[in-house]
Structures are given as C-alpha cells and as structure tokens.
Image (cartoon, rainbow, N blue to C red):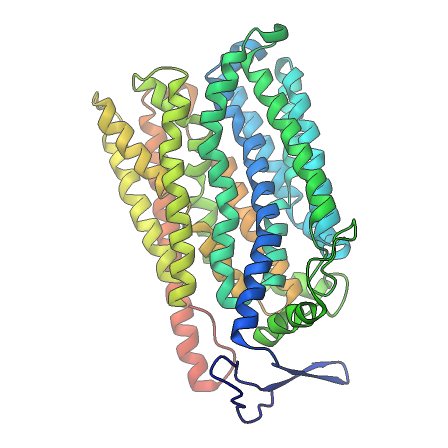
Length: 484
C-alpha cells in the first residue's frame, strides 16, 4: 500500500491517501475523497436499509424454531402422541439438518447473492413452519423437524457474511450483536405471543399449539416476500430486485470503496468460493478454540429454548404464565448482547469480552446446579433468569472475532458458516441434556450444562492466549497482525 501525504481540507475531512489493490497484473488506485460526516450519514442510512430486514428475518427464524417449547405447555406431546425422548430426537434432527447444509448453503449464497437466496430460504421454512400444525405421530414430527432444519440452514451465517460486505472492521461486532437481537427478541416475545395464541384452543376445532404454528408460519412467509422485494443486492449494485434505488450516485461510489480500503480481503475477485479458500479455512488451526467455545457453551441456549417454560412451570408457577415469565431473562439478554457488541467495537478487543461473558454464564450455571434440589421457587427462577440473560450475548462477538482474522472474502464466508455450524451443533448437545428419567429436577442435566460451559470458558481463554503469543512473534519476524 502506498500512502501520500495527508491532505487537510477542513477539520471534518478524512485523511486522504492512496491504496493500490492488485488483482492479477492490474493495480487499482483508490483514494479517500469523502468526509467523515458523509461517511457517518451513509452508515446510518445502511443501518436503516440493511439491518431491519436481516433482524426481522432472524426474528422469524427463531419464532419458528423455538415455538415448539411453548407448544409443550399446551399438551403437544400428548396431542401428537410422542414421548419426551422422541421430542429430543426431533430437536436433534432439526440441528443436524442445519449443520449438514450450513456450508453448502453459503456456497450458493456466494454465487447467487443474499437477496435471492436468503429471501427464498425464509419463504421455504415459512411454509414448513405453517404446515407442521397438521403433523400427527412420530414420523410426521421427525419429518417436519428435519425439513425445518434444512430450510433454515445457512441463514444465520448468510446474514453475517452479508454484513461484512457492507461494514468496516470496527463496525462489525456491534452489527453482529444487533443482528442477533432478532433472535433474542423473538425468544423474548414468543412467550408473550404464545400466552395469547395458546388460549385459542378449540377455535375451529384446532389446538392452541396448532394456531401457534399457523399464525407464526404465515408471518414468516410475509417476511420472506418483503425480503425478496426490498433487500439491496450488494454494495456494488445496491438496488432491490424490484428496482428500488436507495442510494445516490455519490453514496454508491463510497459504499464499496470505504469497505475495501478498510480491508482489501473483502473484495470479491471471483463469483464462487475457490477450493483453496475452503481448504485454507479448514487448515487454519486458530479457528479451533472459537469453534469449541461455540460448540460447547452455546448448548445451554438450546436447552433453555426447549425447556425453560417447563422448568418455570415445574417450580410451581402457572402453566401458561410460565411462557411469559421466561421472557424476562430474554429481554435482559437483548441488553447484554448489544452491550457486548458495542464494547467489543469500542475497545477493539473481542477476546476479553467473550471470556468475561462466559465467566458470568459459568457463575449462574453453577448457581442453578446448586439450587436444583431447592424448594425456593423464587430464588431458582431468579438464577435461571440471570443465566438466560448472559447465556449467549458473547457469541456474536466470538463469531466476529474469528471472521475478522480471515484472510479473504471466501475464507471469511466459510469461517462464519463454521462458527454457526458449531452453535447449531451445540443445539444437538443442548437438546439431549434434559432427559425424561432426570425430570423434574434435572440434577444430571444441570451438571452436564456446567461441564459444557466450563469447556467453552477454557477454550475462550486459549483463544486469547494464542493471539497474544502469535502477535508477539509477528512483531519479531514481521507479518500480519491478528485481532485480539
């Protein structure tokens, strides 16, 4: 990179410099010719156009994936005629479908673009979510869960990767966290929504949980159609499929260049991910502690989605009100998620934020394990609520941390997919932690949760140490600097 002397035009001007980005034998000269004020306004505009559609998409995904936990409080097992262990098997198949198709989904995304691929995914799982209202028996239950997993696979990393194309490095962690607000807002609102819809049992001869699947599934289909109609294609061509133009010519010029100047590895030099980029990602051993942390410490999140309402009910609270009470912790989780993302970008340190989040989660998990046999329902509910509050806010920062250390756009796409695969594989673990022979106290289950969170915490400490020593070595011999 060649830099000219800084040109001071006025006090709001960005320092002007030239960067040469080589692609084959060509050298592309890119100059910063916009002001900080222009860029701030443009970023706010991107936030208003890009983020709402991605967040609402994530909201609908979690709504359709997690409403099965609310259905349990409306005699779902009895109506469908399955056991708790068979229910767990269906949850495992859901996560397995997601994990197996995560990377293939991202390869398609890279080829056809986010608007078409993500929009079609949302519509597809919306139809599956709607028609699962008419399932009956074990076979129907298992088929709908695996279909839902396949259709949902790739959505989360696709959204994250799309954001890395629109935002600079120091803007990414906060947006990843805001993106996950869709997930947590859905988890928070789903209990309140379910509380109302489940009272519809008997309307038109349907159960409450059937109405829950139908109403929320139709909502998802509408979200998918809106995404297909409104989401801009990419920073180079920021128009929607219907031809809506959101940016002026001046803004379009800045959109792409500002991101590439910040990180040249984000430039798409080809329309498909190369085989070598896939191999390089799997050979990159520094991803391993990130992967292990997500694989283990994200397991309780799935357990809480499936069983938190039933847990609160077992403490002695009202059956339907338990759905609403669980949302307290999830609303608080929204706050911790945004806070963790904001601090990570503000401080420029992702590692300490990930580890501190896991330390707090470990503490409240220990508390729930100790109180498993307690008869103090209010204390048990309070500790469970705090555990939910801190159970996943660290995860978007962990994913951002791993993605920032990728060496190319293709490698970044696969890295994000791997991280989301780890979180979904954690769902396979989490869906099996509470067993039928362990209820209602789930002493063994809480012990297992404490073990997996401990492993995740150790992995995050290792990730911090690896970058510390790698950067110290790089200072001596020269080379790329890793993001701590």
